[in-house]
Length: 254
Image 1 (cartoon, helix red, strand yellow):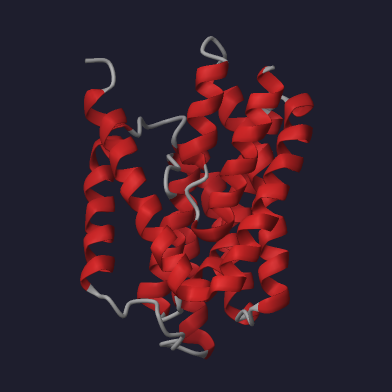
Image 2 (image 1 turned 60 degrees about the horizontal axis):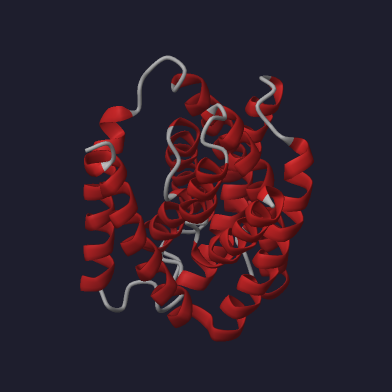
């Protein structure tokens, strides 16, 4: 029964992740509820094992329909992978508690800015080209990749927002690029958890298949309905993340 519930949660997480990120909002709490006495590192590692499959398949699907700036995104992906590994190591040395309390406020700013700028991300108008685009993309990959390794909630949504805001992508192109970067950060985390023995591979196989199925469905909807649909889902997911992270930071345990 636990495997069935975990797989269903993974499928829904893959669906949300493929559109705009935020699948961890569903899968991580589900795993903690199903296995309350299991080491958190094991649950995080198992989560990453499923998530990396979904984001990788979503990246492939987007690439078939959306033209991506590979010359900028490939170096950014390499930076993201390295930064995520670094972040995962740093979290073993420094507590992320201060970031846990700051995160809801950061997300409120992201949501407020997106709502205030009604044309934000509606049109694909890249602001940079050549080396400038590579540099900015690498900065996005490095900063959010480190964040994913160090803490993680909302990583996909942060990738989307920064690709829209800094690089001038529309929400559809940003979501496509975010999948590539998020695959790298997920893979880095999975590598680290694997080396330390914190992955339930017998669960990951079925959860990954469910995550891919959800990812394919979500990608299909995003490509079919376009930027406006992705923007609406982004607003809904960030709103949910604000509530979830605020509860975790200030109300849990009261």
